[in-house]
Image (cartoon, rainbow, N blue to C red; front, side, top):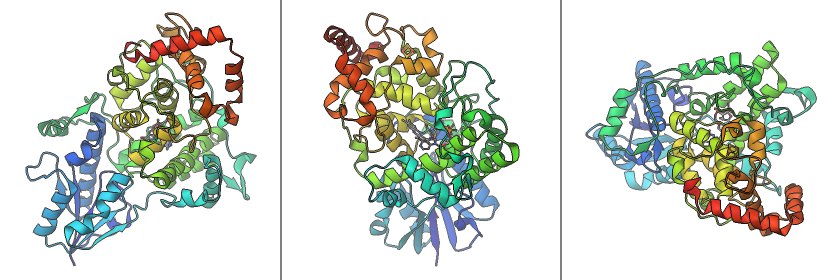
Length: 508
Ligand SMILES: Cc1cc2nc3c(=O)[nH]c(=O)nc-3n(C[C@H](O)[C@H](O)[C@H](O)COP(=O)(O)OP(=O)(O)OC[C@H]3O[C@@H](n4cnc5c(N)ncnc54)[C@H](O)[C@@H]3O)c2cc1C
Ligand code: SF4
């Protein structure tokens, strides 16, 4: 029985049981195809990183004596879609059965799920053996619950995997140390060295350009610094634990003009392509807490992101797809400002966050949520357009994790299913957590006037505009009562100012 096994670009898990031993009757296939680069406009570093990591994975498999059929993006015989490439390989190699690992995207789940109708051979799927929960476990957990809050799920999964637990209770007596993780960073302690590997990708870049794949963003030898194999990913994890983790908690929400990464781990690409497994990362971090006495707020805060948020977000995706991508609770329909593609805006926080995203294909969580996402929501940008931008620009953007973060957490387009209130703020929050405002053309203290920070008037305009949908939200009591008490003349002036900004987003 000749078997063909399809490996997708985000399934680079060498510890999968498929790779326990080579089998003469089994061929593995990997393909770089336009179908997978063109569903949104992508940052060039994302395309480069995935293709490079796929090629490195193929080389590793061949070294271990597995037979791999690898189709490069520039190969003449590449038909640039799964079905036609598979048909040819199946025919040429007299394949009897096709196997694939469950894809993590709904789009691919549908496509691969229908292959047995198109290929005339049996098609079977197996688990990726990567996640800590099954696709429907979050949905099952919340089945009889009114609200799907991450914190409840997080406690369940910590107990299930016995992480940071002691005699049935959380170590330290508290489940969550988020309240201690909101320090501003003003240069001390110094940001650790960037230990990411450097790769020369000129050849693959030429191949990508030779077949006219559309892309955006920067890529040169200096800027392309993402890990492309497990060894490099593991080395980054070790450096993170050694140098950065101790400060991760304190400065998790901080932002700074001189430092675009601070103490974040850069591990999302390695995790999402499955070069690293979530449990091994969690266990190494937990071990380091016991062995090296690292601060509990840092260790718990970091583990919560992977054990809690990452699994929960995936569960929301599978519970809510299809359809979640089209939700638009506030009926927002503005376009993205043009400077989302250039970073050229007078708003310093956005100029910094977007420029670094274009340069490095990376922004950390608070930049994504409280600068770029916050602005998009206040500006009334269409959530699906915001989603496509996030899906294209970030190195770690795969729909199962990007979509609920953007549509649910950041844009509240699901009406509060994921987030208990919209993540919006005025300039006060950005000024508190960063030094961006001190060198901005706008004044963070002003609500009205030529130089008034757009966040301030747009913030109040947002709540005024959506008061019918938000006035009963118990978490917005203070905002709603401030809005009610606001003197009518002041309110009119603020709304006028906000409308002037939102009608001229490209000019900000
Ligand atoms: C609008 C928006 C879009 C996002 N899109 C993506 C995306 O496409 N892909 C992605 O992996 N993350 C996404 N995130 C979550 C988070 O911003 C990134 O995981 C993080 O910035 C990656 O950098 P890091 O590895 O240095 O993370 P760290 O800050 O070091 O965190 C460690 C790990 O925790 C996990 N994690 C942290 N926060 C989340 C979260 N909210 N959801 C799921 N996992 C989380 C990631 O695997 C990350 O590598 C998004 C967040 C927002 C607000
Ligand atoms: S003043 Fe406003 S626009 Fe400028 S950096 Fe601060 S929050 Fe951003």
